[in-house]
Image (tube, rainbow over all chains, first blue to last red):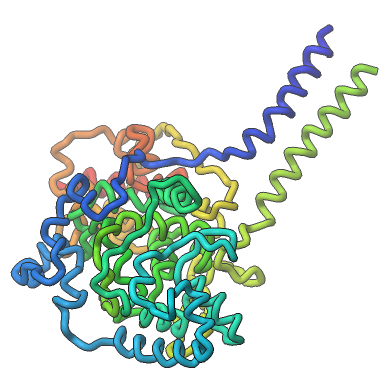
Length: 293
Length: 181
């Protein structure tokens, strides 16, 4: 009788084991509800009221290093910032590459342009791509469509981001508009991104939200933590330290800064995070070419 | 006969566990940015101007040992750990201060204000005049070793549980913050 009981317990253990292996113990920060619109920041940091009108930012806040975080760095975006920088050179190169690839009009159509017009295209990315069978960001689609034309434009490379800057610059001033509330692949991606935003990882056991939800406006050494709302509108961005940086390369930089293993650009996890952050930017105008420190 | 079945079951059980473990250790998620042949596998993307290709350079530390954001990563986070401190503390406050400012060690200054340093962080509690709190050494030791023991949502890295600092280094840090008056 006893050995049978033990065997039964062991068998039960064998049945349970795969279930445990399927669900590793991971720590999540407190998951809060986020309004998938840039106005949701009023419930989080409240700084949105200072940067909601990109044309009329308060220059007194912009000039004060203790307070400029309240502008969410939008004082470095057009039209408030009128300087010429590396982002403009990237847009020029992107335009040249785009025209080279788009001689037949196939490249623009592949990106999703209607009647060859790029106007407003950036406001609908990331989007569900039936040809790829998943949600994809603009840079991933550019890589794929360029490959069809016989050109290597690796996701995250300068030339890929340059084409992305050029395409996005055709939508500058138009509000980001992705629907993450209608059930479908985009909503599922948004929800995965929300979970990832709160999932602790790496050597320091930090989640994105450890700082960007609960510590907004506070100092981390010389930096001040800003809100996640409205951030996806200015990528790819010209960084004075890193040249041209796509959003996925920015995620890799965030990961390395918090000593977490970075992923390759275009990975599913980074795309989900991109969808989440773009959802939090809904309603805010595309601001490209743009620069940051 | 029954015993025989049981041992087979047991060995199958153990083999199953072993297989799972070896798979987790050897196979990295396919979306990791790594150079699998290097000692420090982690690589950093480098953008090359006017090029359609991304370059990768080695990172100073191998980060593949810790759980990542990859959907394929099936590893668990190390659970919160309660520890007991054996007195005497035997910590050196001078070494502790060096650790509190060292980028690769404690780097407490990122979040905490410490005396005599510019650009402190404000995320963590201010540590100026920390001595006046009269906290027992054991509590401070536990807070640095694994703050999740007190607050599961603490953002303070678990320096002891995650092996960022050794026990002696945490003792030095405790001696340092307890000396701030």
